[in-house]
Amino acid sequence: SEPGPSPSPSLRLSLSPSPSLSRSLGAMEVKALDEDYQTRMAGFEADCADGKGDGYSCQSAGEFFAVVKTDHERAARIFQRNCDEGNYGSSCFSMARFHITGKGAEQDDAKAFAYFEKACKHGHAPGCYHAGLLKRSGVGTAPNLPSAMKDFTVACQDPGNIPEACYEMATQFLKARDAVAEPKKGGWLPGWLGGGGGDKPIERDPVKALKLLERGCERGHGPSCFNAAVMYKKGDTGVAPDPEKFARYKAETQRLVKVHGSVGQGVRGT
Image 1 (spheres, rainbow, N blue to C red):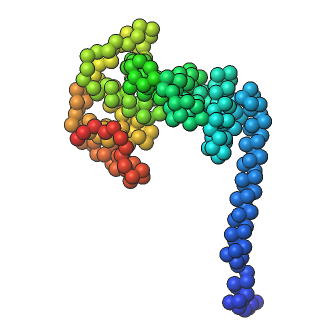
Image 2: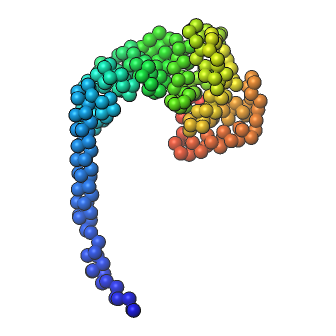
Image 3: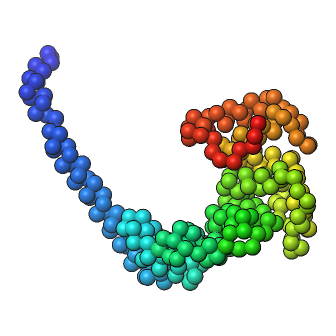
């Protein structure tokens, strides 16, 4: 059969929603979504029971008050109780951040460090990484590089896989210094990095550094890729120049720069 006549221009226009109707529909969808979100957050707050209930619910309720409602004091009360009484690592980390910034709690580097340590103790890898940063820098606690390296190790390896922690370790292994002895209670180097426990000194070790940079690069960390490329270009003690690997890590650095707009901070000089 023959196709029917095309709708007239005026009819075609009438079949499309008007701009004002589209805006109204969009606003209705946003409102419905917002109401659903508010309902879910109210459920989390109820399940949290003022910090005495389910840890995940308390963390979610705290983030809701901190980020959406910008009620940092209320969020801090939830995080603090969920950390101190519930031993929930993410909430310990959130409290540490509040103490670092002074939002929701007094600005106190020592308290921030204590909460980062608690977060690490309760299995929160970012807490280990940040505790290591403060120990390395001597902020909120006495400088302690061997202990910082232990924290970085936990954050770098599975299941933490924080590339910045791997990079921090690599940076220390590339520095020339007198050996710094590790505490006597066991070693901090994992097996994949040549560790086996015992009293290991922190000495310059480009081979270990390169393994860490490669691990960081595999996880999309631009400075790690860049520094690995530099090492393969120039070589170092125990590391032979390798044009093929230099080209590979250079290309990955360029790819990450294109994606993120920069390589990041802390790269070695070329």
